[in-house]
Length: 640
Image (cartoon, rainbow, N blue to C red):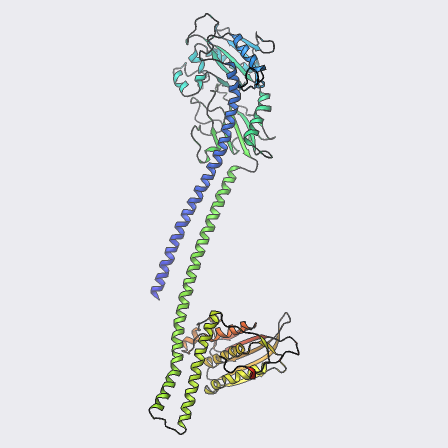
């Protein structure tokens, strides 16, 4: 017993260790799956936002390409050359002179030329495509801050190409000797020469232009070409088109889309939905710094997000910076940044990620519970198998004793007759009676075992027919008469008069009641009394049954054993302690008999007082043509 307990304890510890290991692995798997799902969502959204940014830059680049500033930075061009290029690009149809060139002339506001050849006296010119001429222009309000900045960086081409960078004090880092032009050019796309002012907004480019015939060099002063962007066209045409292209679905936009300008006074440049804008920056699914921060700027932008130039990992997709195409001209301390912000209409994508995480954890927990349930079922099955094996061994021991007793008596009687101890007279009939009784007892044990085997194999079948209660009781009295007489018991019957016939199988009914009476004899005490009653009962639903009860006044049954006394091979603790012989099959067979006839078997017991077993059988429906099955019609050779 101690070894068994230790074995089961070791098995439980091993199972607990396996479950704990599986739980840890499942949690890691759920976390990795959730991270992978987050990276997938982030990568898809990142890709859409980067394509959106690329197409926005494409809109601006188309304008720059149209002006065709060459590798000599315009050293051999005159202003009329720029005017002619712009007029051709502005009015040409795609299938005519420029069939493969993308055109978006509506996005262009104005084109200016800033001549800074005379230091301290710059001149601003405006290109008029309708009149096809270049004329002097007053300084527009939106260029008030930009023009002085360009004039201050017009000394040479290297300085002009890096006019976008400045220190916090407003002094160019090149002028202060902190950063060389070559280093800055390598760290950005400024080598193309085009720079962007997000506040106007405007595209600017330095030009080494002083007219044909004049020698110019990289160290010569530069002029500037300035192209302003029409914000109305940008907000009402370009940005809505890009939003629909990359964030649209079958039923419209799948995302809320906004373009925000941050600075001292944040403002909404474009919003796909009323009320969605600058106030939501930092609280949306993802934000993209459209014009990436430059190395001269602090490592964090206006939203506090780090400057990210690498592939996104995990939650980094919530706020990141795109690649730089046009260096942005900075005006310290009035720095302004443009952000693209998106938010899914069906709810925050972070909630989707959390939902996936919760789903994965739930599935993992269910799998773990199923695994634990399987282990529990296996353990219960193993315990039941072990218990059943123990009961079978007890049954073998019990039946061996039950069979050995009559066999020993038969053997002794035969031996005495063989040895001449009994030669005749009255002794020989007594020995014959002994042999017959013990043989009958032996046959009953064998029959009971064979009957149990047939029940377990499903071979036993019973057919319910109308039977008279008085005939049943008469047959049972005859079957148990010898047992009652040998043990000196008295049986008291209380049979209600005019009982209706019951539906049952005579063999099964007799077998059930015989087992109940046999148990009453075995478990009774010195009073040796058995009480048999039969009466008509009516249930709450109105159904009528005949209850045949067998009552003994013996040792009784504990409440803990009542639930199991009908199990095969089970014997209560009181019976084992009293060393009452038995196989543990009697009540199991009686229960089977009752159920097979559509009836039931119930028990009421109290330790030290006795037990009452009641067989409930259904009443025959009124049919005068149905014959009564009498005991005389039974096959005398049936197994009881």
